[in-house]
Image (tube, rainbow, N blue to C red; front, side):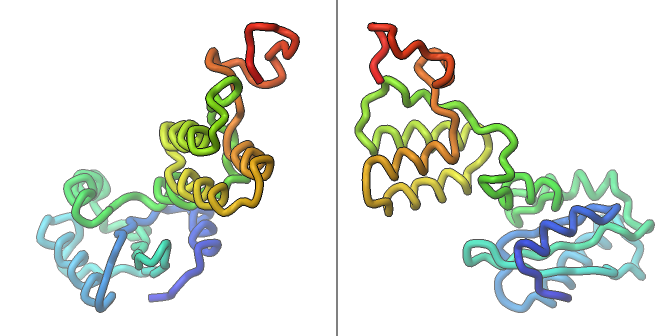
Length: 191
């Protein structure tokens, strides 16, 4: 088992096979490997002689996670997919590709920022934080929402706070018009 940094975990997606990720693996990691291998054998997903060729451990936000390579042709992938869904809630099981998309995307990697209706909203910074956080979470960027809140609450000015929020979201008015589309000379719109 090899320990990886998060940037190295992202590079695993370049392999021509996926990985099964278990989140929050505490204690002896070899026991986790033995346990999941035995569960797969008991559920007839792999033969009794099976062992994983590649296993990686990595940490994210204080939790230890394991990534099991799914490169062995003796794995019944259809049954594994069903099994993964069964253990999802208890073991945080997911495919590595999904884990990367949901937990390892940097703000710079977000292709399209979610729209957040902060133009014309109550300008209280905590209200704007809530609007931006909600927009990020709805778009599936839960980690970015936490990161944005942390950065904004540690900022030193209102302007810096707004600038940070705009790194994560596309500011719009209540109708979804982006800032460029808003006629700033329209008397009905508050900026």
